[in-house]
Image 1 (cartoon, rainbow, N blue to C red):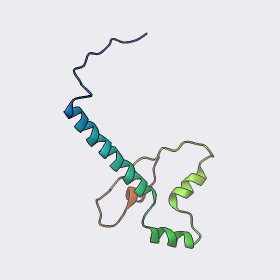
Image 2: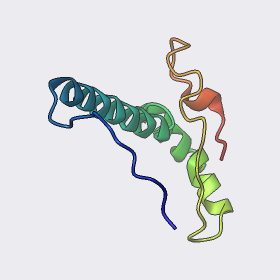
Image 3: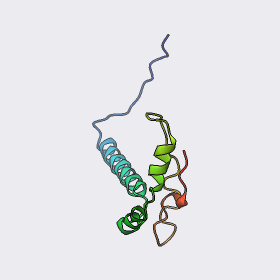
Image 4: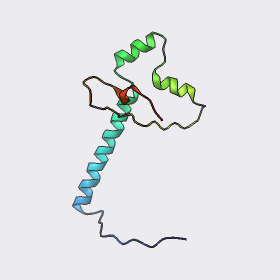
Length: 96
C-alpha cells in the first residue's frame, strides 16, 4: 500500500536550493558543536578540580545509573545557552 506520488517544482540544482542547503548544513554543524561544548560540562579548570576531588562529572554519574547499552536521549542541553555571562550548560540540569 503506497500513497500518491507528490509532484514538486523543487530543483535541487537551483541556486537558492543550494544556498539554503549550505546554510542549513552550517546551522546543523553549529548545533552539533554547541551540544558537544555543553556536554563537556564547563571549562577544563572546573572539570579538573571536580575530578581531583574524587567526584564524577554529572554526565558520568548519569551514565553509571543506566544499564549498559540502554539508550538515553538527552534533551534541553542548550537551555539558557547564551543567557548568562558564565557558562551554565543546560541551566545546570541534565534531562532525558
